[in-house]
Image (cartoon, rainbow, N blue to C red; front, side):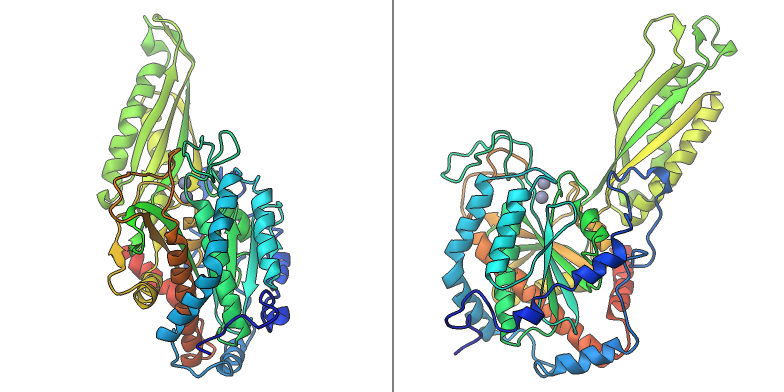
Length: 508
Ligand SMILES: [Zn+2]
Ligand SMILES: [Zn+2]
């Protein structure tokens, strides 16, 4: 036998899963559910601060004295150190797994595609995932709000790696003419989250087989996150202890500009931050004949609208590409009266994590200085969207190594930073990890698809590709973490990697 086939006679209940598949997240939940780290609405204004070097306060992994030594010796019983992915053996195992499951998983994706659900309403989707994982002998755990879940695979006494999928759809009409088009008017999986979900389910089923065969040197946590588009589901996962004890987290996102079979990689920021700002200006108001006896509010507002973006461009490193662009400005109702209030609303986009953290305080100070010059009162409401997703160098290398192993040396291609937002960035504020772009475009196809369009679709052979990449990346990261525990007993691998992430994000 070339590898760990599913146990005969009980294909859906891998050996060892009663213990190995038991989620430890329940205990983590008790430690962290009382805390909402950023608030569900994320309207934190200018009070948000950097959550420390690599670890979000309150979400530190539980570490007992000597835990690393225990983990090292126990995991050492699984397989000798130095064994990596298994090369051709892993390929054969993945081939065999996909030969048996690819069709079923493609139908799983189509079922989700036909029944898309918006953020925090993913009840049916959650149920489908729970059913499939439970049928394989796993024990998924639904998040407190009722949608989204996580599920642990493998022994708890080694490193832990998370694979994250987002499960929500978009408020768009499905314009495709395919048998699996959306059956819900005005809702469609136009961002490929049905594909992400299916790939993590598939990778999870494969890794459960590996765990049953004693080939997993640690734990894999499948994270099925609700409400990425809303956004903010990542914060619910974190509040529920979803990344507690996780050393690294990985995610794939469909990219219709990359051909299927390829993987787009980038170290450092890969998506952008997008926040909203609301400025309110007030003054006494009065006759336009006597602006010197009141405060000329419209003039002051115009100064704020032009000066704030200009001053920011001279206060922030231009490489951060921080930009404030107004979308709405409003004041006054008649030509000869100075109004007593006015507003300006806009968005802040930013490619750099450090500048993003500094933006609210800086903007608040600049606003006050401009307003003071014209004797008006000004207030700023700063609403956080998502941070930039800053890929950690070591995690990107793990993606690269894994894709070379299971897709070939040429599969990894460079990908640019997108100005779009992605709430995966929240996880990477706390732990190292990476998001890669999965090619979903049929090679040679003349059709130009894009995300967030009613006609978006994928070449479904990307599902098998994504499962290979996710499974191989998880194994790469587990073996790396396992060796880290062995070489530095008692040392904290995740702290070491957090330091590397800091260096990587600053130098890129
Ligand atoms: Zn999207
Ligand atoms: Zn998306």
